[in-house]
Image (cartoon, rainbow, N blue to C red):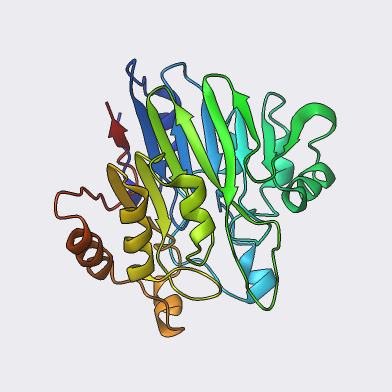
Length: 270
């Protein structure tokens, strides 16, 4: 099964029907900071899926590229947001997500509070503070440090995630500036680093992201937080030069590997 973004079809059937081999993990990009991780056991978690146009309401910014999946069709086992900014915890996704009764919602208190208001009642939510973890089937999710100081909407309990699937450990930075406490939580513990590069509104830039990937000693560095509204973001000073990220990382780690995420093509770790 293939995904053809030009025809506007959904990526969901491909994610749903793909079988992940034993010992592996598949990672799909949903644009911006959104990802889906699928295990050999068939369990699926999604981090920071932005699937509507809700940022029009909050910041008058329309997405330039259509969502690759619809919230109504996504039968994830769990959704987690790193913080409650709309392009990470999409407020218009919460209610349709809640209709899938097996789905859980994970995150810091500010995230879980919104999820509970949107229909994730009772034991369907789990609050995760720094260094706390939970299991979703055969996937372990641990919250790690993030520092996301955005003046308009401060997020003091923002976090990143360290997601373990078998032998593979996947870091998702969420939105964060570079901070030594991220290194404390993740150094030597990361195989795949999904790392923000946009450099504005309280985030690492391309060079800081390359430095963090090197400090983590990851096996694969994957830049993210782009592809949704690149034109407007670049005009606002965002650092979206992927080659600058690559050059920085490879200068520090000449034997390092990187992969630029592509919509519809999973990152496959075997």
